[in-house]
Amino acid sequence: MFKIYNILCPVDFSDASRKAVRYAYEFAVNMRASIVLLNIIDIPIESLVNNMQLDEELEKSARQELVALKNELLSEGLKVEILVEIGIPADVILDQAAKRDVNLIIMGSHGKKGVTRLVLGSVAETVLRKADCPVLIVKSVEKEFIEE
Image 1 (cartoon, rainbow, N blue to C red):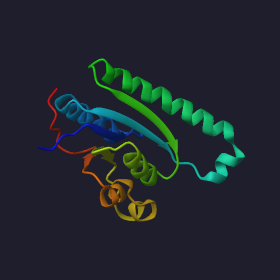
Image 2 (tube, rainbow, N blue to C red):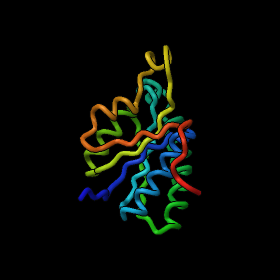
Image 3 (cartoon, rainbow, N blue to C red):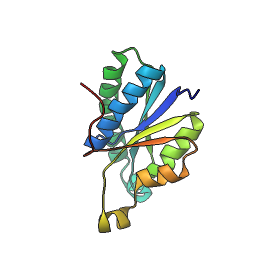
Image 4 (cartoon, one colour):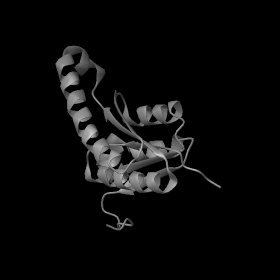
């Protein structure tokens, strides 16, 4: 039997990632799993060196939003951890999944297409290809499977 015990849910506060949190919640409740909510601040290192205050402000803001999400999930009795990291999103997600012995990643996808996707790449696609565990991709405009 497959047992989910630790779910990593990257959150960028978009509609897609907020949907992913709802999916992570449902999986966690039904499998008695814990959730790690991860926000990645994706700033070029040159910007951080020149403006450490920006880094601190972005991290503080992200942490406040994650705490609000965490509190919603804690009210249901789940074990939830929050984490804010700086780096390249796909690399940080894969690194944290390995460090925390995650056995399911649930993340949103913005569904970028065409030139935007070619230029920016796809974090979800990179994670899907390189992760050592199953990855559930939640699209912002897909049919909703979770009942209210």
